[in-house]
Each structure stands twice: as C-alpha cells, then as structure tokens.
Amino acid sequence: MTASAKIWDPQTWNRYAYARSNPLAYIDPSGMAEVSAAACAQDKHCVTVNVNVIWDKGLSDSQKTAFEKNQLQNAKDQYGDADIDLKVTYTEGSVTRNGDNISVSKSAIKAGARNVAVTDEVLTDRGKSGRNGTTAVSFVAPNGTDLPHEMAHQFTGDTNPGIVNGFLSKDPTGFLLGLSDTYADFSNDFERAWMRNLDQHSGVMSHYLFASVFNHDAAVFQKTIQPTTKPQ
Image 1 (cartoon, rainbow, N blue to C red):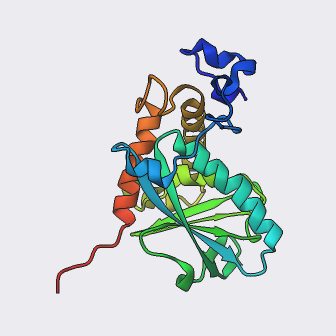
Image 2 (cartoon, rainbow, N blue to C red):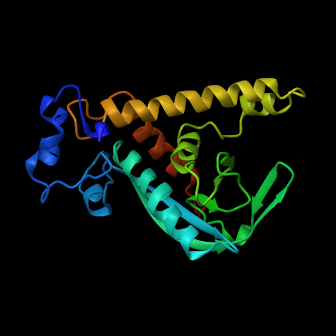
C-alpha cells in the first residue's frame, strides 16, 4: 500500500482515505497504475511499446495464468507510472538451452515487438535479455519476478550491441562484464523504485527525472526495433 503514498500529498499518507475515499471511482490495488490503450491514445506524452509473449512448449495453463496475473500485470503497472502502454500479443514457440546459451524459435519472434519468451528453461531468479539489430528478446520463468527488471535492461539500452558491450564480451575473465551487469542491475532497480514511490506520471513531478527517462527510452526503443520498409 505504501507505493501509493506521495511525500508531497499528505492525503495519500492516510491508509483509511486510500483511493480518495472513493473506491468506486479510483481503483488501484497494487499502488501502481496501468495505462489503458484508450487513455494512452489521448495523452501526447504516452508511449506504446509492442510486447509479444512467446509461450514455450509444455507450459501449463496455470503457469500461463500465473505469468499474466503477476509478472505481466506488474510490468504494466510499473511502466504505467511512466506513461508507457504495453500492447501485448501472444505466439507459441520452442525454447532451447545449450549451456549458458538460450534461444527461441525464429518463427515465434515478432518484428517490431519486445519479445518475451516464457519458459521453464530459465531459473526463477535469473532472467536473460538480448538484442540483435531490430530483434529484442527476453527470457523469463513463468513463476518468477523478472519481467519488469528485464524490460528495464532493454529500454535503457543495456542489451544494445556496440563498442562497449563488444569490448566487455571479449574479456576472458568475465570480470568486467559481470561488473557492468551488476551496475546495470542496481541502477535499473533503483530507478524503478524511485519512479514507483516519488516520480509517477500522475503527480506534481510529472515526466520528471526517472519517469521521464523510462518514458523517453521506451519511445526510442520502440522506434529502433520497428522494421522499416524501403521503397521499391
């Protein structure tokens, strides 16, 4: 419940007065707020990001339901605080693992979307994300908590191929890459926590600091993964 309180608005400190004493008009059980597609269309600041959920073969209906109700809804609520609408579609695919390498069938990957493969091949506490040109894929466990975290890595460019990531990947010790990953994990988690508690789109600090960073980065991300059609 404390995620709904804002230091500049004392009325929100009172748990009895949660939802402005009008629960019929204001419903926000998580303390965060998903942005609907209709509301996003009316807001010039709102960004729509396409998300393609890929169900790995063998997942049960209960695992799929758990993912949608927990990880996916949590991501919608968290990034709703930055005026980001997650437009979700679904496909079926096949995930394979070979040691530390994990991949999903190319036929399941959707162009112009942030692909999320939901699979038992990922440990509950270890999601994984990668980017190759316009293709962005994350792997998360159906009963884990990684999706909002992995989305932050994609939005902020941590997975983008480039000189820095190319250099880090060639370190034979893996120390520099591990250090970089640790820093990215900490900074992204800190920024999301700040956004949830102090910097939501509905407050007086609207589009300020970290909420605006995620909002801007999500717009850049969607633009860079969107395939372009060259004139014939």
